[in-house]
Image 1 (cartoon, one colour):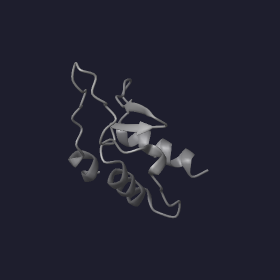
Image 2 (cartoon, one colour):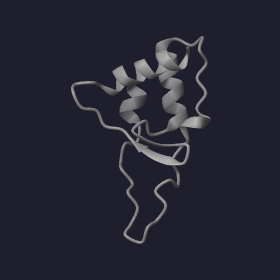
Image 3 (cartoon, one colour):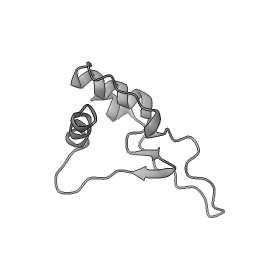
Image 4 (cartoon, helix red, strand yellow):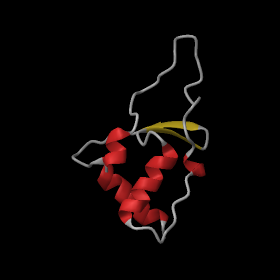
Length: 86
């Protein structure tokens, strides 16, 4: 979980001139997680590949994550990993 804490979570919103907010963001489609890895290894691999787990691209869209209702990033990531490996 230290990788998540160290991840750059600053929001880069671009400027009023309409600069492309996608520049520098990693694409979720490029992330490859080996199903045989342990949960901890999967998290480490995901964070290493995606860079900022709270802001990335997915199919051309900028995704910004925030959680309501008491869910944590770790809980959501665990659910994602579980569903992705099916």
